[in-house]
Image 1 (cartoon, helix red, strand yellow):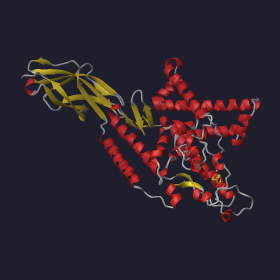
Image 2 (image 1 turned 90 degrees about the vertical axis):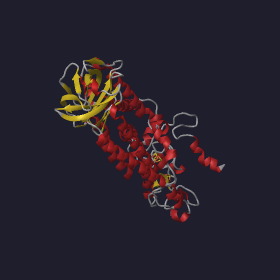
Image 3 (image 1 turned 45 degrees about the vertical axis):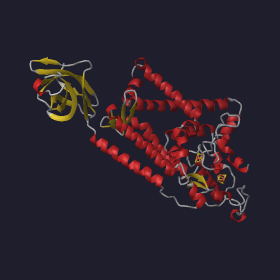
Image 4 (image 1 turned 135 degrees about the horizontal axis):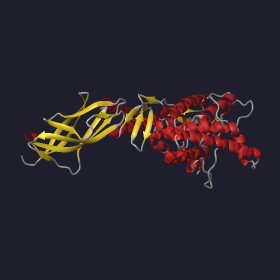
Length: 471
Ligand code: SF4
Ligand code: SF4
């Protein structure tokens, strides 16, 4: 029964009350060394997140996720639909990396790196502290009747939230459609870019909803990575943890009395001040153990260290530790599971680097036109094919010519014979391939074709050439 009571907090999440309604969290502003480092990390990440779509390397946007046109740039490296396998390997690599990281260090990514937390805790929450004040003032303001001061604060806060959401929406759009296109949408006649403007407003509304209202619910309810925690973590994973052995001892936790000599009382080092609960942005009590809501933000470590200092007890009652560290006093070990993930990570990284080096800058595809067969002319067979040349480089490819490599014969471009492929673009059209009948041995002859630029071979490809069944 006692055990049932102890575990009953696991039956619901910290942000939903007993009647099923949203329990609004008013986290106390954290102060401490971890918060200081988180702030530094957040400056770097905010600069990165807000700047990455506006930085170009060799003319390529640093990060681009143009899903509609299926064009992606990762660290200035362009991926075309033809490079989809590379993108898949990169994504698997990212997932394995995050999984490995979680197995070893728990959910620290969420509290320190995830854009949701960075924007919520380091941007929106700071605006809130500046306007509404710290936890106590926020609670009072919430309860207070509507008066001019409350109305002014609410209008000011939500206007700033809306403006920040609009800025984030612009940057988000730059990730999706490219910064050049975003500038066009902003600077051109709005009527020419109605769909772009509507997207911008929808994204603004979504970000405003998330950061002004939905907040920590993203991490607690919506984020699939949060759910994965329960399968990734084990007793050896290092997480933000309460040292219950030290905190409770034989006599359990207890409030601190003035001039008390806690170590000699038999009571635990936890002085039951509730500061770790008050600072928690997901509304949990870390003293109950690792919980799915915990984003490892370390705010409770700072709060507890501050209190330990005050009562002259050693810091680290809440700290980064594994269950084995606390329960058995064991040091962290590199487990078989960690070794396995590391091996997969190394193999995938090697695979990706190999694939990137082997990737062609120019890609040629030559296909038979659907429904077209072949013609015969004197002693030659002529076939009509479709070509597509993709230039993944940032330089235009000049004077392109296409030649037969495997057979004697001719390749003639239909239409404009001066072929160039602009940078980061593709050219397509049709070709006549003419081969002497005596050189065709099968009705479906495999032929090899070379693509040249200024007479230098830049790509080879193969296709099937249809000829008569009997010779
Ligand atoms: S329990 Fe601590 S680390 Fe976890 S979310 Fe709350 S304050 Fe952050
Ligand atoms: S902050 Fe530390 S001392 Fe205070 S209740 Fe939390 S664990 Fe106990």
